[in-house]
Image (cartoon, rainbow, N blue to C red; front, side, top):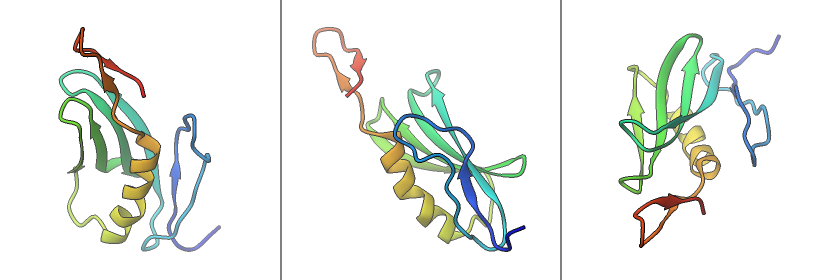
Length: 107
């Protein structure tokens, strides 16, 4: 058994490297990709410790911005610093909007 903490992808999607690990204060973390369409529109990368969600990095397609939502207190800064670049890369670009229909298209 490893000492130290690790975060890893619980689910993979195109472009991910699968499981990745990194020590953070002796605690295991997992990342889960999530899609949301109602009431929000976008993709998220959630960080969990055991059965507790800690935070998400959410790509808000309607607002065309990335946001971080905390679900717990005392989230280690090192964890946020490690996961934010991963979220930017893995959540991808905002969808293009169709001028004629007002509908978002991938890409």
